[in-house]
Length: 374
Image (tube, rainbow, N blue to C red):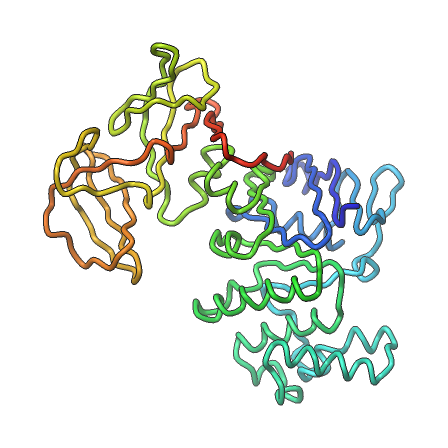
């Protein structure tokens, strides 16, 4: 039985359709990330699951229980849905200590004091806040405040956790630490987690399932591997990946029983495409673009423009016949000893999209079946 199920969920704000019909099923124990640009509907979806927004139509089930239905006019309030929630703004009571912020809901539920004390102790230990139970939020750093919000979830032990961009206010180092903490929390609690972010790194590193959204619609739902290596359409391919994919305009034609992809900077056969032919766009990720220092068969001449070392890798911007392309080199380079180079790539790593529909027309034989979602 699924843990979270949205069936035909829509949301209007006046005459504006913010969330077209959505169908999404999340299995028990999954860590699912709703990923997309600002305004894509991911936070609206999360708030609908939480009960903070009322859908315009559809049905919503949590742990097999119907919590909203437009046909039966059922709408269970947020506090009775058995959910844990972490907000971007932490949502701590400023006039309460860390201890009170963590245990308030437990006290309201009239839980026995010994059990409250034990849950508080375990929660503070897991987020490394022992000894800070008597402090107020204003006496804590931003990272510590976020840990209090996490501790509140741990103490509540909810089966379904909702997280709305909880790490966006933290510095880079603390974000990395907290990503691991939240993933560990979800695993240890065996909780079903729905996580909202626009940060693709968070999505790729934390998720069992990523749901990429745009304009209120699900573009693709799949594992991090599927989303990154086999994007369903050009939007997903461009949104996922840093640096972004390199795009080449090309034409697909059938020659001697094989589909040939040809254009400026690309020329290869694609036997794994079901396509009648026409204009296509070829996407190659920067790590698959190879820089050669001497001419090679199939190599395209380019010129080094900007070299940006990031530590273990170097981002290299190049000029390819007036087109800007990016390569990612697995080493630290502050400069390139020559301006003139040659580029090539393994065609097996090229993604091919129909120029009109922008759908991925290439399906590698070893690809797992994508998880269907509308």
